[in-house]
Length: 170
Image (cartoon, rainbow, N blue to C red; front, side):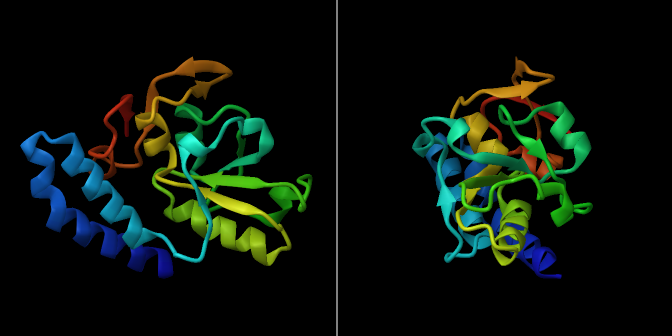
């Protein structure tokens, strides 16, 4: 129920700030996107921005989107764990003392999974700020079947408005 409330609040924020999207100013969109994300995130849950990541190999990277989204593209080396089907059994092989980076489309689902990981004893869990959309907008590499791709599953057309660098897939 909590995630539905956050999505509802984010949707309201999108409606209120959507006029900025049509004036063609990238800065306005960036401000609008930041406002949207601020409404989705728990201030106490740590985030990491794409520019702060020098090497993904320093993290155990978990994709918390649905399998069909993961199959379009994902971060290099990411392990798919899902959201609706997530189970702690899917992460039994991970080291609870090593950093974990969780991500989804924009960061709401991954934050929920990240909280479950922390409750299960994972010591250093970080949410990727802006999710795969922001990762792509920052021109970071995405992969499909171990090959680079520009495609990004944006969850829906509504969320797809935030993707400014990459090929939208719904």
